[in-house]
Length: 461
Image (cartoon, rainbow, N blue to C red; front, top):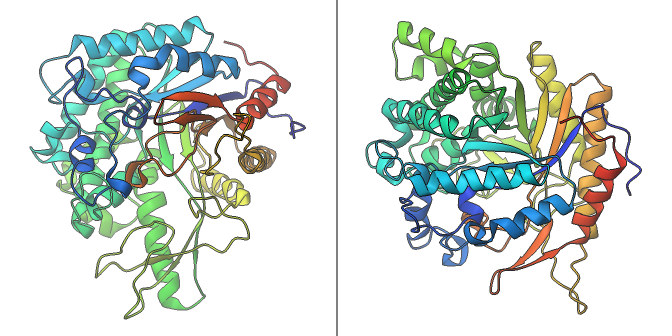
């Protein structure tokens, strides 16, 4: 299944990971605790009571892990930098050992012909900052800008592509509005200041990166089509509210310099003068816009007496004006997520229509969890993942044919890893990891992806 449509000249293929999900070594070489270190050790938070303390031990096995990436012929590797490994308390003292680790990682990628694409924040806020207010405090955004400047000063002579933050909507929804991810605040609509402060952090990071001479700067945002469960007015309103809070609350300030509704604008923790200054910073031009896509969402208005456990896998607090339902699909991943490749084409087209000045797009995450295990001969055959990736790459090609400027596609994930609240049960990787022995086994999807890449024209460096 490598007879994919030719993608645009210069199209780049990659794989993605995140620091807390793979690194382990949470208390080694001066690293400070993050909100996920604390959250995972609280009883009942994570499926099976598991933590990322060891994860897949990438901190010690990074060289051989990079060999797996190089063997697949990928052009780009998107990884994240642990803020608390670089600055253990989020501000102040810089941990030389932490910076040195990422320097070795970047040099190792370049030596293997792979472009490093670091994400500067993938949900693992230093716990010391959380104790001072976390993303509910403006000072956290300012601290992020200072941290980014430190990293850029050290790595900017070798890193050409930077991603500021990953999926702000997910952290604010799951970790601040709800309580299913770290830090587990459960604030409901009271979490909206965290949205503004993460957006401000993005703007401050873009400024710091530009001042350091960064060549290309972008962000990774989760997007998905949202549909109402029926054409009844309450369901349409609920779906519209959910669509605004998940797709447009973050994209509109970044790509259009405004909040999507006057109600959201008024909910932000700044006066009109400061808000205008913040939005000018937040909407600074980007060189690419990262889109993470997994599945569409179906929404209905809450019904009395119904306990909702929908595609978001969360309990919706009383008073929330929407409830996610299981999206109808004949095919599902082993995580229970609907397999709808056309949803990727649809959201890319919707983004292009909503934002006439949309920067070039990179699919910064797309993948699926299937619980494939080694066969008797030790091989890991995962034909369902191959079919999933094949269909979604074709969906990207359809979006390109419709006029969307898509420049790259990164699989989530390079390796099986710690999958946040789901622990180690879900496996997204192209490389299988035996968590008891840390042995790596390349899945058949890894070989398939290698062949797909080889069949496309090699982009220029």
